[in-house]
Length: 239
Length: 239
Image 1 (cartoon, rainbow over the protein chains, first blue to last red):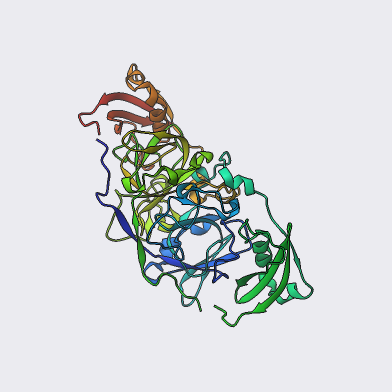
Image 2: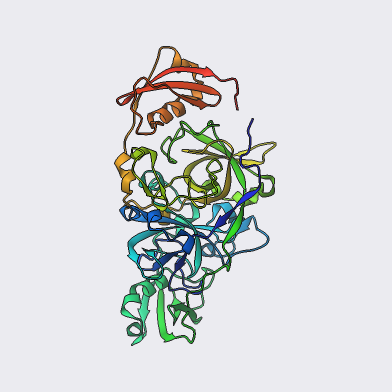
């Protein structure tokens, strides 16, 4: 009566593209897409999928869905519950009631803004997007247009995520530090710190955090609701 | 410098659940999720993932994302362009500028409303959802909460999909036909016909279409902007 389809246990998915962002490590990344609109990424199609016809009319959409592999979160076993870092680290919720990367299938879903389609010499047409929330080199398995008619649900309630809506830090810079950040990157860096990368159970005003953005190591402390950026220095490794 | 991660060409994903709806065939299904709010589905976890902890706190969210396998759309080759049926069938758009099931990785994305979490004797906890748009038996690869903060983008423009916003048919029933549809299914059936299942290049007022919903074959014709439902009869096969 109620036949399962496919008749097997799963499917293989192929990487169609990779996203490149300023973050080669996870710390500092916004926890969801759209939180830091200034944070941009480049989506480069893999050669087999580098066909301009495959993105025909894509620029008529302002927003896209990126389905990607949480490639840093592969585990042999899955856990039914996770502890969202923003909930104090000691409250467990079900993995299917979370956007945690540690899930039975490590697939992420981000909504990004399409800034432009850029023609390049070596990589074909590249999508420049903003509001991204993934580490550089993340493999992409699908790109879909955002359809307001089905995807935009203003009446939706966001569970525990609503508790965090509107929360952000003030960001202040020690003298001379702001100027050390390339002009084009200042808004993105400020936005990422504003979104508070700390796990929420951390509350030590003396603790120094380091976030690496485009090869620049940015150190900051947080006291109450203000982040103080202490330094911004080139790292040896600019990857 | 810009290392790809994962170091391979893709990953395997496992089916975690199956969705059961009133449609055992594709014709009549809404083209996107949320279009027919009355259309419900049951998401049944596969035994390995049937753990009540995995959905802890899920009922605090009103809407969920379902990532699923377009199991009826598997093809050995992929085509860079598709012809969305609503665009007259002769306009090609890029596959990544469409929600077509025929894509390099046949993965679909639907936003559904969580109506309730139902405890069952044989299937564990089952999710009852509405606004579904998939054929019965569709295998699910992930369930995520809808987070308004990142997923709801009221400023998004929907490209060619905006051209269709608000379009629907009037639905009229021949005498006695409405009463043949079980009371609980009348709104769903009416909603599906209202959303106009015909390919948009069809325009023959004499052509009879047949849609099978929960074993009931519903026949209708369309003239201008009105659908006339001619009959509703049990089919031999009630799957």
